Image (cartoon, rainbow, N blue to C red; front, side, top):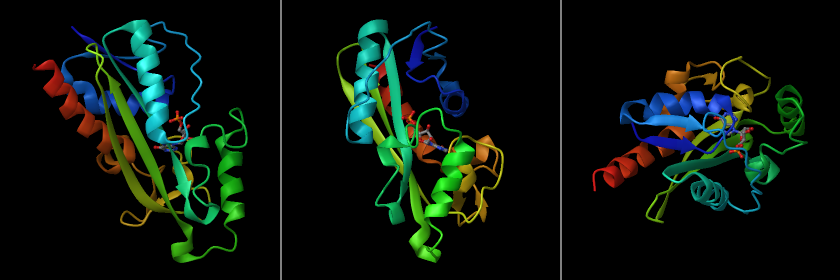
Length: 199
Ligand code: IMP
């Protein structure tokens, strides 16, 4: 069976990714599954740039089809922060309880629409023929007034989805995949991969 490496070590993301790419009939491996230890400097200034940096660097090492995503939370009241720095915000090792509470605290004076935010996801695919493709998607929401829910990962407990009247930590992984930035970008990428492997 052919394999696709998804250049992440984040198990929360891998769970979502496997659910979506599961029907491709290809083995979906994380960096850990593939035994790859690579310290790639994500020094791009956009989600797209970082995704391409990761996918192409790992493709050179591992060969085959390599996907990478770069994602994050943009809070409008904070000028788009933490944005591309979402994972590194307040330090990579700081717990999300602390990061999430810090964001809520900074929005103490923000009401209604002022609390708008979005998750953004860019996915890059680096193919064996040297071509690179990118997909991007977002999900719009609001920063909640308190940490809520224990599903998902990262900033999910403060990302309130108005249509569901819940945070993305209060919905199942299946439900999140249907509406999330990563779910949408990954389904678009799945079509690109299908097209590539059918050539
Ligand atoms: P990266 O894409 O691995 O650089 O990290 C993106 C960071 O953005 C994650 O570590 C989370 O902090 C945050 N993030 C991205 N997508 C999600 C999501 O679906 N839920 C919660 N947090 C997310």
